[in-house]
Amino acid sequence: MDKLSPNQIMKKTFKYAAVRFAIPIAAAIISLISLSILTKLMLNGESKIAHYIGILIWFLISAAAYVGLEFLVGYKFHAGQMAIITDAVSVNMIPADMDALAKESTEYRFPSGNEYLSYRNAVRGSIQQLQMQLNTFAENRLRVPVVGQLIRFCQFVIGHALSFVFDLILCYTFWRDGKGLYTSAADGIAVYWDSWRRMMRSVMILAIMVIAGMATGFAFIFVIVAVSCSPASGPLAGALAGIVVGFLVCKSAKTILDTFLTIRTLDAFFEEAQYADYNAEEYENMCRYSKKYDKLYRKAVNEAFAPAPEPAGGYGNDYGMY
Picture 1 (cartoon, rainbow, N blue to C red):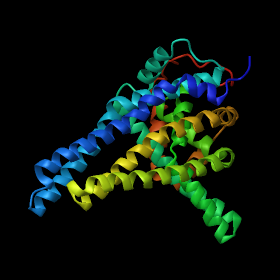
Picture 2 (picture 1 turned 90 degrees about the horizontal axis):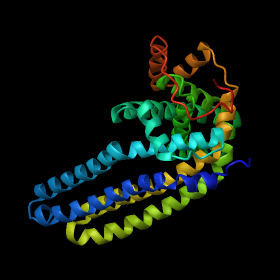
Picture 3 (picture 1 turned 90 degrees about the vertical axis):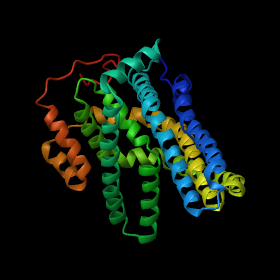
Picture 4 (picture 1 turned 45 degrees about the vertical axis):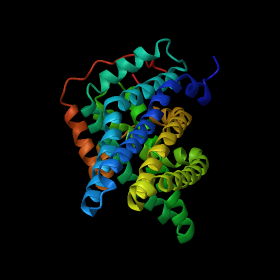
């Protein structure tokens, strides 16, 4: 059987990405509508205090709309899509009932939004802190200041602005469904720690090109929204509206990019994980570089004393993990 290509997997799971894509757009629309309403109620008043209070209320409404939609709806589609992608890459087959697999896997790993939020914050924080140390390693090894700074910037953009690394760890967590939630997360981050050069090499040029396009798009959206909103709401509110809407639109675009990069690199990531074997000293080494990873690792250690969960099934044994 021919291996499924990244484009095939992306096309089959696109409906999940489309929902995730729509969430920031919906938040942007809510933001603009709320700004219009508040403009009529408060921002056109003569009182500067009322004007600033109106901007603050609008900003809080915009943030609450995005966080609320992402927390209540987005995480289920995000985790569900990553579960399907994990299945597609590990057994080279799209499940017949994708919705059932997505629902079962997500509920098994993340019974509530709070559990997902705790997991996401722990993993993303660990990745960010460890990436900073990896950037330092790369710069010191090159010993060429200008080139070192360029590499450091590229790694910063890929490691932070693009969250596909988190998606890789999330897929790994679904793949190792016989292990505890934080145990699999700690192992997945350790795999990335060892293989980041190869992971970054395969996507760096593409990522930088797309980021440049997103930056251009953000600037265009910012100008359009700021100019459109400023006459009614004032220059400050117009500029803030441009920033908020531009950010949310770029967040939508980044959803598609992160998904494609995850699919493209996941097979190599699983290959790396197949032969990964770490001891306590290696985990402690990462803990020294990241306080957040240290906290995550301690949670993983605590899981070792709890009963092991039953595997959720669905991912096969192509890589001999079980």
